[in-house]
Length: 291
Image 1 (cartoon, rainbow, N blue to C red):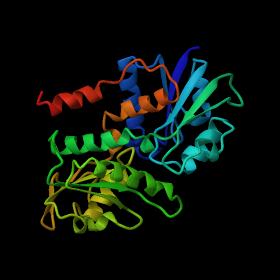
Image 2: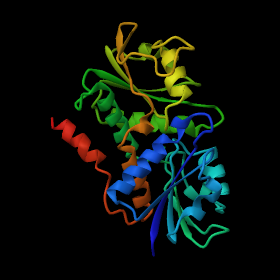
Image 3: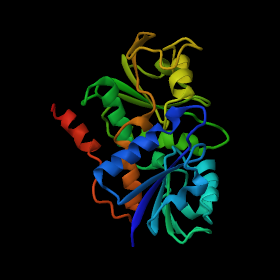
């Protein structure tokens, strides 16, 4: 039976950068020849989620949400728009453990493997670390450096914070960085006081967001004192000196090329015949080896 990968993302009518990671990662996967057919669909752009499965030729489809956490979009919007008879309990997850469930759409003759979001996959911890390497230009970054994993956080969805805390805990357990903290925009502990949470002089800040936009390019930099509120998007220094610390602000982790391999990991975990990875991991290994 032929197989396809359908990457589903939020997109935006107002911010063209919102859909850029999904397009870029899909292109990387196509170029690697990892899956025979690769499509994208968006909540706020075309091709729409509503028509996403209709664009696919293959009979068996692996749907991977390019979202950070389990919640409203992954448990309600996407299944509804794809006309999948899905309940959140089908994932049997505590908020970070979603795997996949096999379903039959109501309107097209296909078998769909609906996967958990990329943001809660274990491989995301590696992408966060890669992001720290990228922003500092140091493949060995870690000793004597603090790492802040930053999420939105919201009392309306406790899973939003769970994903951030999950990866912060996993990275801390590796003993690579001097300190690792989970910080948030809208709940405690807040990113506004980022330097209060670290003793290390150098602090790398990696937002667990899929795309760069208002939050990652204006709100968080202004909250941390990297830029003036209302200044232009992306108007901050890297590193920036704040309260005696050098703050290395990475921007959205979802733009990191290695994210394409997390999408493939999600599909492979659900049973997809993934023939290769994108090469982003090998590129990072080469940097780590001084190549």
